[in-house]
Image 1: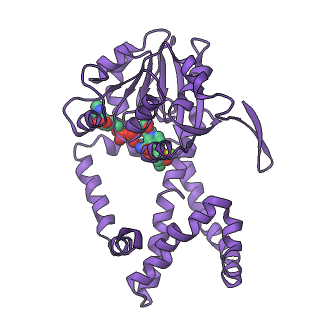
Image 2 (image 1 turned 120 degrees about the vertical axis):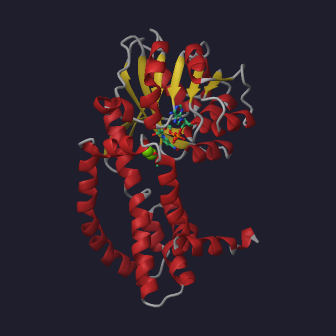
Image 3 (image 1 turned 90 degrees about the vertical axis):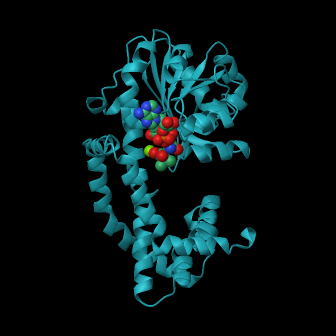
Length: 348
Ligand SMILES: NC(=O)c1ccc[n+]([C@@H]2O[C@H](COP(=O)([O-])OP(=O)(O)OC[C@H]3O[C@@H](n4cnc5c(N)ncnc54)[C@H](O)[C@@H]3O)[C@@H](O)[C@H]2O)c1
Ligand SMILES: CC(C)(O)[C@@H](O)C(=O)O
Ligand SMILES: [Mg+2]
Ligand SMILES: [Mg+2]
């Protein structure tokens, strides 16, 4: 564990070189890791663990698209791929990677398999933090741990394959065996994390729900829409509006931010752009900060959790979700985006 300076605040983090893969493998050599759920995180985490040499099995509802995907990814029915309860019975570490709503539904069937000495692992603080709504109360004899990759399971896998790593947070809610720390860090390394930073279940879910509703997904689409619509309403073409709103950001400027920070990206733009961006950033901050405060409050009071649980438990949830996503897909901005992407030289 290292204490590092993050912009003036000292934080406890775990680096790969402090807890190398060899140590992680040694720590978990007698464990069977049962990854329950093969949606987005399930494939990323289970395949990274498998490729890293851990003893992994997958538990997934039989007969659906996710089961078929698992078979395609090399999991063998009856050997390394089982129905959920069978995998949970075999696992000494149970990685609960069903969707947050499905975790509630399946919990009564999973709980009997959480016998003393096992570990219950989450990638989200949701189920435990909002247990007044989820009903997820872990039995006393099990470790309750969390590794939350800070990104999509798709990126977790892609970055692992490319020899990179996605940063993750880790937390321990219950240390029944005295081994919770070594177990959680070994798993964090095993799933392909970059560095690991400490959190607790509540802070993880509050920050995660805020981030995805905010700058990572919700706010970014909202700002894209606002700027695109203003440009279009003033007579700019879709090509111009899309390039000036999205394409330039993802293809030119964000890679510079990723590489060396916002200051460096600013330094590589014109003095005209620098002046304008420095003048306008405070206006955008002040306009959006009350919205972020509202959002955080909605997360902290459990309103967002309730909305997510309620909407996910509607029988027509999938149909409605697909209709909303289709609306996004069919919007002029993202239709224009498809044409723009097809014109990238590497796609020709
Ligand atoms: N999606 C991500 O990349 C991501 C990133 C970080 C953390 N997380 C967290 O990881 C966990 C898993 O999320 P996900 O996005 O991979 O889940 P998901 O929505 O992709 O679903 C995972 C699995 O749940 C199964 N499932 C759904 N309803 C079910 C039911 N009623 N009974 C049995 N199985 C059912 C599906 O078949 C699927 O295989 C969640 O806690 C989530 O918050 C996800
Ligand atoms: C990938 C995200 C947005 O970070 C994750 O939190 C999720 O819920 O899918
Ligand atoms: Mg999330
Ligand atoms: Mg997240």
